[in-house]
Structure formats: structure tokens, C-alpha cells
Image (cartoon, rainbow, N blue to C red; front, side, top):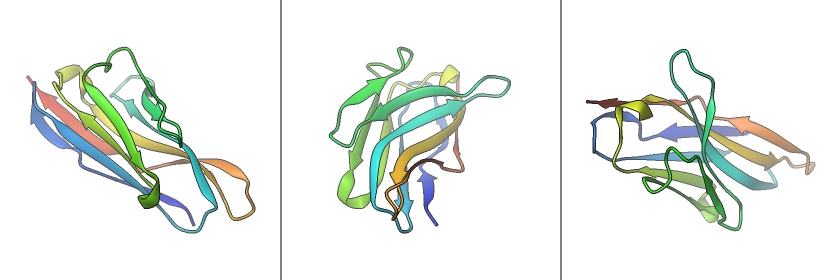
Length: 120
């Protein structure tokens, strides 16, 4: 059973920083792209950042220059360093990964989410 487990959320003041982590566990063949999404109350889920297996990153315009996504393939882990946080960054942050199972069938997996709250 493949699982994505996030950690690192919490409460921070505006201008502060947080680092999110997401580790994939279980039996699988490989991990392709990984990423972070967020969903605020009453809003649709939105892309925050994605990163390819080779390290190419893509960011939402709203977080460019403030957030950095990275990954450690050997640890099956993706990170999101969030700096200069704003109250509008408040949301549940969800990890996503494209994972090939032991039959090499690629599927989309989601973590359970971690709450990030930025106070003004």
C-alpha cells in the first residue's frame, strides 16, 4: 500500500517561514513528478508547485520568489520551503505524487494534508 505522509504544517505569523515534507512509503517501482497543492476554506484546490524526477520545478504565480520545492529521490521525499508567508497562504497543503506500482502502472496519490495557518 503506497502512502504519502506530510509533516511540517503549523501556525506562523505573516512574514515567517515553514518547511513542509512529504514522504512516500510502501512498495512501488518509481516516483515520477511530485508536487504540492493547497485548498483554502470555500475555495477550489490549486497548484502550488511541482517538481519532476529530474528536478525541474514549476510554481504558481502567487508563490514565485517565496516558495521553493525540492526533492530527495533516495528518500522518496519532496519538500516545500515557504518564506515570506502571507495570510492568504492559509490553507490545507496536500502532497501529490505520480507513482508507478510494482506492475509499472502509474497512479496519482495524495497525502492527507497538513494545515498551514498564517496570522496577520
